[in-house]
Image 1 (cartoon, rainbow, N blue to C red):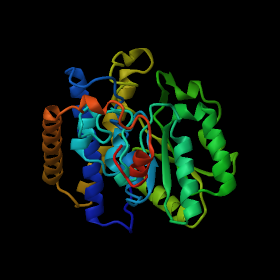
Image 2 (image 1 turned 90 degrees about the vertical axis):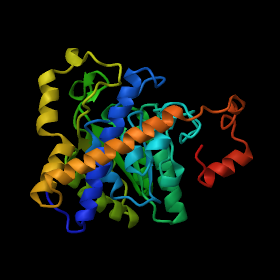
Image 3 (image 1 turned 135 degrees about the vertical axis):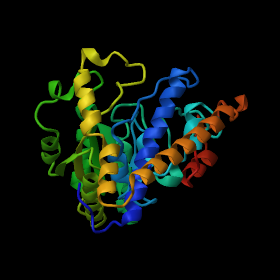
Image 4 (image 1 turned 30 degrees about the horizontal axis):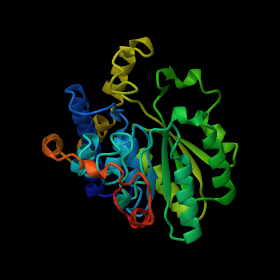
Length: 339
């Protein structure tokens, strides 16, 4: 890890706290599922925190992101609050989508989050459309499209890359390559390199250590600035790792990856542990201060879970609300409404 002259100690501490917040959120979400308090499945982001934080730290509140089925980390890194997040997971009225989106469909318009999407690669068109809108309006906004390595097999990706390259759109395609497409090693299903696929469209592509939050932030900051100058689009392949299975019910992972592999990533390449060690070495935070951040975040998460568990469910009369988009709802959505 190396320091960025554009950052100060406060920036680094904020990045560390955000990574810890994502880890704490996922730990609590997993416990809610295991205790049968959360409906449906969820896909843990644990282990990939440096990607979401490193990228979103380079964005403004006005910049946009699109997310995936494994999207809690993106939402939190872009500014989502724990209470509304947990309420959404539990199907409660105060959730970002009034409890109707659940784990895989959280949108937070106020923070520039255009929404998570359970369809593999489903947000690629949305992100590209957002970038086209920004270019036509000339507002300087940049859109980051998060997706996994498995989504590179979707035809939509090639369609949007072609369009974005032709029109030089301000979009960054951020591929979180965690080594597995569901239960299969990426190397067994993806021929060639992922960066070469983007480069075939004339798109500059970069491969980055997704466990190093400073490296992720450095390249993203550069590409965001270039996007604002009209030099986009760009492609990032972020090499990372998910600690859990494909989803919370995927507990028998031995048949497609070894315990030794998991242990190696957790012990030697954990993004939070390594960044915390760097902060300590740079004398930005002491071990005690790092522990204090962890404790503060744990208390924040617990309070939010307790709040969400007691929060009310949506009124049954709302069953058709936001299902059919009339003019009133459409205008509310464009104005930044929550649903």
